[in-house]
Image (cartoon, rainbow, N blue to C red):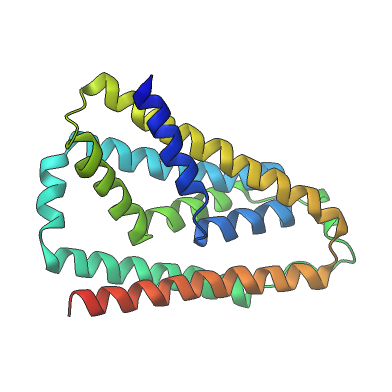
Length: 211
């Protein structure tokens, strides 16, 4: 159970990080409600699960990738550009015109597109790749955890991420009744700018570190 608790602690720490995922979850929760936020979150969680399975089953191969500066450089560049494109799309789009945000709940939400957006934001974020590689090499391999202990550890992390993400969506939905259309426009601008800036910063770091 110690490994499960350690996973929960790491998941809580990860949930406190202000990143593109936080802004995307808040935007979905405010604009479309809980189901839409959960759909976007599901894309994020499936992405994390695939990363976990990948690093767990091919740690030796991934270690060779991490040691290759050229591969890391291109992974970082591609991921940063995708984040910037998602941010630009969010920044330039506008919500449907209406007086109060709560009225949006009567419209049909494109859940499959929200799922895909969450999956893309998480998958192409270079931080996600490096985070799971670091967890695998720095904790699982370093502590020589067997399959059972590693499963408990990753379950604690992913389970905590899911619960905290759902909490963020619920809180975002709670405040939507107080928001008007102009507030929603500003929320999209903030979310879009945040995603765009994260992409720019990541690109700058990649070009600086692997110059």
